[in-house]
Length: 299
Image (cartoon, one colour):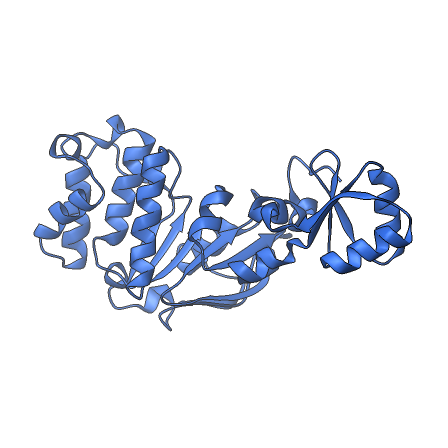
């Protein structure tokens, strides 16, 4: 389990993380989402002892990372696959990791097999690895201590579709076996597929959190009419919040019956009216973080 309690990190006058609190439970995959600069990486660095918080706390398995007796045997971490020593081979990196935390030499071959790095690839220097190979090596290093918790920042970077599917299945098995997974990714579809719980952060603050089902249930109702401007005005007049959805549809934050009644009362024939469960995580994420998107999100 990972517990974040009123965690704050300031750099001078800049607040990177502002009093965030959440829990990543054992046996579940928690997706940690937010735009670039939202505070995800800072939060994860605090969790694994690389950055000191200004206030609040981050504990893993009930302790600060620095207080764990042998962190590599309890927490697997992958924050930056490109940070591996470029002059060493993949096997050397895993061998050093195993020795450092007291794991048997046989564990190295087990992990190479697990992440599908061949003997030839394991003997190459990391500078000659593709990004996808570095990600696989980083995941092997995170798992080498047979930890209870995984903290992974963008582990799918550089993986091809087959590699992403492999990683998804691996993390699902890890959680199903009782492990805790905290996963940051910009691949929202992958988070939607694998995550049990989702935390969304924007401008250093938690803007939404809960189970995946709870978050997706806020999608509301998709409604379409020939005159979408008049429909939007009618729904707004009825006290229903609406958002554009595609070129000519609206997503209304209300149920089907309320939306239908409002359109009928205004004399506006609708051409489509259905639950907006197809909106998915991406649309909800963009709306929740619209004020913090670097590129901006059209209204």
